[in-house]
Image (tube, rainbow, N blue to C red):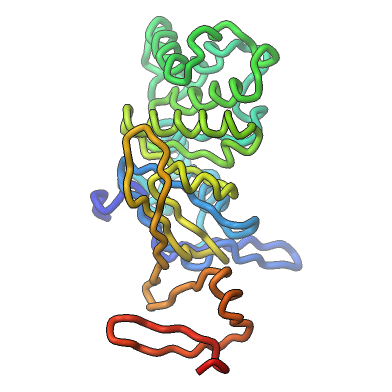
Length: 294
């Protein structure tokens, strides 16, 4: 796989969860490429497969079929030791629940320093670890809270410390699972601005999974997943560095078999309730309509 195609390349990705009496198809042949240095949000309703995808990218879950390459590595073929190294050195992870991000009896500085002892940054001296941790705290505007413990920080401040922790191993990809789900609207904007800062100043590829569609105004590219496949994408028309993106164009995604998912609100507006649709070619346009309207 040519890594220049993208730092993340998913081809026909399938994930099946099996229990004794049930089989759930979480991903159904998902295709997705994310370029190095992109800031991307992945949205979708509950059960759409977005969190399953994020867990696979983080090396926390394994695909059932398809292809998954991250930074030139075939995640299907990694040994246990190689997968551990991948999780330590390639990806940083942010959880919605701060209890999974922070150790309450350590202060902010020590929380950030701790992962560097086990990651690819483990060769740093103690002085270098603390200097790097302070640099990250400054980036999230918490340089004056280095000695504060979990109980002395607000929810928004805790999440900003979590952002710094996720970068402590100097990853190439930052993965975030509902990072703004437990903060208010003002902190949501602050956190998204920090993601943009990490992306622009450090060149880190950022992938954010969320159900909050208001975030579409805050990132360059939004990928919508429905029923385990990419259904559409929203791309910014114009972007000003460091500013909120206000307008996007929506594009349907054509899969390898020539299939396209019609957005649910379009189906409702056209009152398409059955499993057939009238299709017509009008010069350079494809027209869809309900069978009875033709």
